[in-house]
Image 1: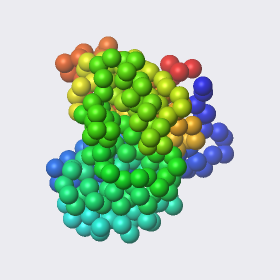
Image 2: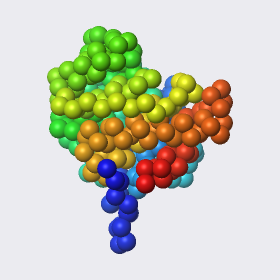
Image 3: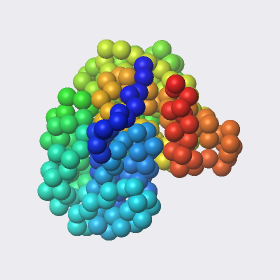
Image 4: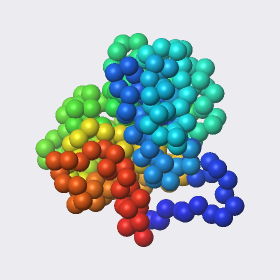
Length: 269
């Protein structure tokens, strides 16, 4: 498949507008990594909605980020009015990155998942929240521990069995799942794909955030669910492989992966 390049005459926003709901007084960087990965993957605009306690710090990471806030140090009902306003401004939501698993936070995550109508990527702390997405285009991006939280069972060490688990979970949830691992397994409950890009250096914190950002950009550009999920796993892993060759496994950090996303995209030609 091919990713459509921006056309002459396109205006700002036509190539994808993403929103990340994340951040807390414990985790500042996670939502910024998602947003920066999305922009490196072609999204025109990246909004971040974070508590006012952390929003100024997140905004300081890059002038490319559009950071909105609500009162407090963690996600609460005080964010609802802003979420409703941002809904019409963006194409896809990523939720969970850096939010924490505090009881009040999880309750608010559930509320957002069950009312958000556009495509939604449920990641990190939002995975395992017992909620039925209102969106008809929902994605989950778990690693092994989060997959158990999502489904009740750990992924099998056997690849063929693991593929069947992901397929069954995607079908049950009526969603697209990317199970991250040495071999990524992707399914929408009808089809299955696997991906082998990526390396041991990507155990560093934040590479899952970059995957969510790449996926958000591809979904915002109108790529179909299974194709967007498969391609994002491939591109994120390939960016990590390119970074590994230059930096080495013991020095790799998530921002290195994000900076190599353009190089990975060029290889898709």
